Amino acid sequence: MRTEKITAERLTENIQKRIDIQNTQPERFNARLNLQLEEVNTEANIKAVFGFNVGEWCLNPYGDVHGGVVASILDTSMGLGAAGICESNVNTTDMTVSYLSAMNTHRFYICCEYTKIGRRMIRCISRAEDKHGKVYATAMASFMVMGDEKTIG
Image 1: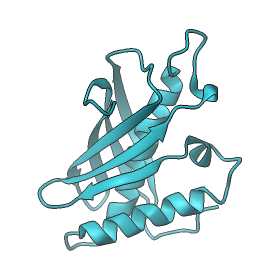
Image 2 (image 1 turned 90 degrees about the horizontal axis):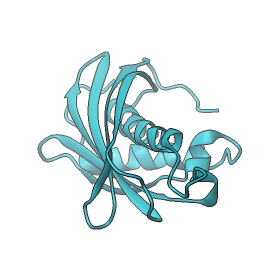
Image 3 (image 1 turned 90 degrees about the vertical axis):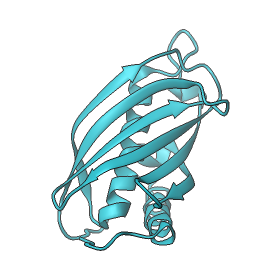
Image 4 (image 1 turned 30 degrees about the vertical axis):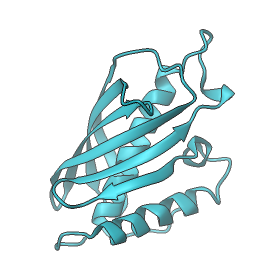
């Protein structure tokens, strides 16, 4: 695991590498989400923003994004950033999601802020918002650092 502060360039490279690997496995869940890295900032607290395009498969019977998909995009976005920060695989240890409004638009942004980065645990808060900044859901999660990087596959 890295001990010095990570640069925005390095973090962007680490996250994009994981996304690229996930996209080589089209039948797996993370590839199906098709998250896109939009922005990384490491100036104060480390932050990452991911884009998510809503597909028909994401919708519940009422035409809104299914709550399980919302939780999954929050969890996966936060996890991608956590793994990029520590340059190791991570596992979600706990997560709390608050659903604030029905998600009924076609594109969302998952804004993640990493509030505690330790040797064994990383804490993150995130929000799902639209292009106007309306917040639809928030989440808090902890990720356990799993040690040395392993092959994803």
